[in-house]
Length: 358
Image (cartoon, rainbow, N blue to C red; front, top):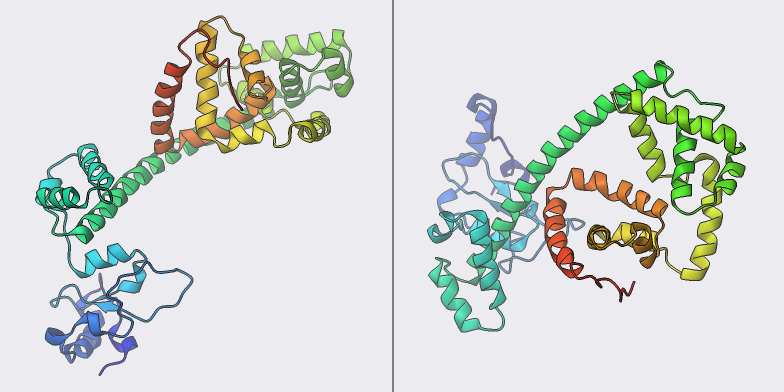
């Protein structure tokens, strides 16, 4: 019998003259009587495979007229391997449906799989599945197709985002070369933006001026000049630099100040409220909706943030954390819509959010 290395080669995509010797090798194999189930390493229970484990070669030749074959060990999912080996296909009853309709049907059947086995069996037969394994394989296939669609959409979003970022970087570089970002009275744009973020977050102006090392008359002049430059900048390069520094204000002269404040705050409150919102997208959308609905009810946005243990500066950093993710993740955008519908309804009443437990 031929060795595994002699038989297991992938020549797909090559010209026949390039693998003529290989054709002679596999022609000596008795393919008509070959049974992959009896090959070394075959496991008919189709377990999920661990990528860190080196399994025996488990070859499968899908078409006797083709020279190449595959190694089923390359398919980690047991049910996917089962489907490939048994040449399962999506039933005609499902193929004609759009993705969302099929998804609802699959979810409905899965919902009764364990609780109502007889009804489950009837349902899978109704939709053309031969048995439970066929249904499980099709479920995974549907999920995989959805994942691939999302990945394709995300790739387009990333491409568009990268293009916009490159264009903005070029505008910022031009602004720097043209002197639009030169410091004013020794105060650069990042410091000015971070200082404004601290003031918006409740830090006293005198403390901010002390950290910067300037006085109020100079601060007023600097602010007027930076505002004038931004209003005259049609490329929005200065606005971009300002926004980045405002939403991530713990930089430069304010970096150590924030570290001291955070240490003191964490000692009192335990885990940082800021970290919680950065780790929980649903919570982020919830707070966003609370602010939005609160504004229509005459509530102050900053006071709403305080109910969640956040400052205006914190909220800026949270936005800087989630915004780029939402710009390149279509699934996150879909979730955002679901969460907004949920929490806008929750905060629609005038007293919504009064009993927050954060």
